[in-house]
Image 1: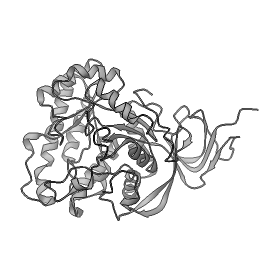
Image 2: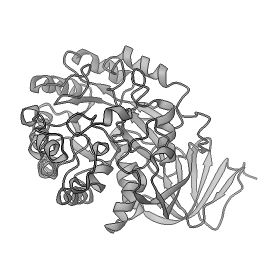
Image 3: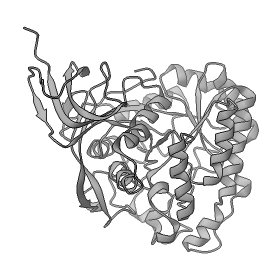
Image 4: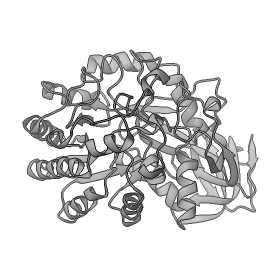
Amino acid sequence: MDEPYDLVVRSRRAVTPDGERPLVVAVRAGRIAALLPYDEPPPARETADLGDLALLPGLVDTHVHVNEPGRTHWEGFASATRAAAAGGVTTIVDMPLNSLPPTVDVASLEIKRKAARGQCHVDVGFWGGAVPGNVADLRPLHEAGVFGVKCFLSPSGVDEFPALDRDGLRAALAELASFDGLLIAHAEDPAALTEPTGPTYPDFLRSRTPDAERRAVEQVIELAAETGARAHIVHVSAAACVEPLRQAQRDGVRISAETCPHYLCLTAEEVTGPAYKCCPPVREAANRDALWQALADGVLMGIVSDHSPSTPDLKVPDFAAAWGGISSLQLGLPVVWTAALSRGYGLADVVRWMARGPAALAGLPYKGGLRAGADADLVAFDPAAEFTVDVAALHHRNPVSPYHGRTLKGVVRTTWSRGVAVDYVTPNGRFLTPGR
């Protein structure tokens, strides 16, 4: 008789790359060993029968600011990864800035890994940083296992992570092209940004126009084409960026782009306070509709959180002075599902945008899908259940969210990381490197 599987999960709504279907997912040694017919569950040490609950692959969030060490009072690895698991996210990739020191060389990468060790409830990878003067550090960072390097083309908001000018961007891309590394860019043209003329949201919105985004995206496209490097635009908020990206992709430029739940689900018309402030900003409803179309067309490859928390005292008093960042790591799946469902999209679309696309960007072949050989990162998801967001009940460290009081559809019931149910007490996450 064959050895029993470690875990068998049954669902009538398993979301595979081929769509939803009844399925048994059989797990052995942390991997999906087999996908089997729903009516023939094999012997297993543990069985979970989800019935009509959906079974999703664990989501992959490649845009998370954990902030530890240095600004751990903003967020830390323990709280961030608990929030991730509660939101169905089983893999995060941490951004290089807002921690102290920023991850701009191998020594700072090791400091961050040391801080994270033994705290993570999901699997974690790391981005490096490209800043003025560290071109020589980019290859060593790549060899040490970062997934790519992040740069800003406009001020980052923290002095220790300065922006690249045009020459610095070209130099970084040329160096990355020499070993096929990936550059991810915060794309806003500093020459097109202004200081807000007042404290209101319209004042802030006028200070960071769609044109500022588009001009910076066009610069990245131009220099990626010139150098042959791989480049990716983070958190696209402006629909004005879609056509330049579409044309560049048609022309064979190695350029991709993402967007975030807040740009797809919130609108400038409904903003009520600084909890909504982020950079680039949440824009108008018509702009939001165009971003959904860009996702459907494949110009935007995925949806990631840009979870960028801070302490509550930094989110006041107004839009001119408040910290620009939205905490959404735990809420991204229900936020996106609520909006996607209203637009006629299905769970297979959400999985494509929030699991498979980000996993492909980061080069994680064992993440992002229900398939034999993949890591057994699984999510039991009730797509019909509704809940009202209570920011005090979320796992992230500071109780600030623009979604507070909002009713959302979709509840995560259980999250398994490599075949083990996350219990929010025992940190079993691993560090990841590209290809693993």
